Image (cartoon, one colour):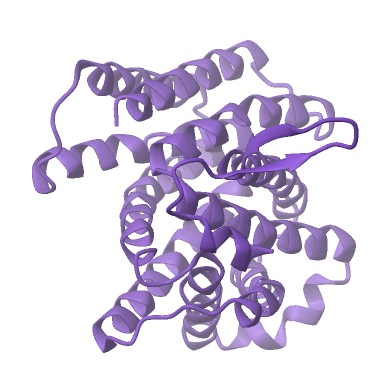
Length: 308
């Protein structure tokens, strides 16, 4: 399935047909973008459910990468595409190293603050992408990007100003650092997609090197995997599996269309994260503040990306 989509990535109108009585034309990249957003929403809520009780972040991160490697392996074997230049393999390893840092910051923050706040703050990565683009990639300045940047910063300021518990402050600090790392990963991923296809990149850059580096940095995590299964093993396995599928869907969407188009769809799912957090996780502190920050963050992200 993924090999077919890769084969049509350069066609001007990437669509397929659904239905029995008639034909419904749907952009393939849009399908994968929506799928990635839905999977990420479920994954985020499950991770929060587990990590607010379980503090062994290294072990969870290792299991997440191992499950991701296993899930993405058959897709990669069915449609492999990898570079031949050694420099690109080294760059893939660097991405894996950055992902280890990104995972540790993300999972630690997930245990400290609500997922709606975390995902609203993550939109600040687009601010870094905007700044890097203007300073280093000679991308043109636009007022829409500036307005979107200001809205994202305003959402971040509102979160920082409103949630001042020690755990919240620590979680917010971790996410702010992570946005910088995540922006670099996003730029490198888009660059590597010219040499990999989506499923190969997911396996060789997203999960496998991250798993290897995690074992090197925290060798005891491998022996502790069984211990995290004593509680919530179904939740852990499902969260990690959904994360792997979410990455596959996102990278496939990125290979079929621009970063801006794909991420705009993903931003909308932040609203579902807020609803799920309120209903499923029963985390309802300052719900109106969270709703305002989500709206500001989504509006800022959309403004930044529609002008890209």
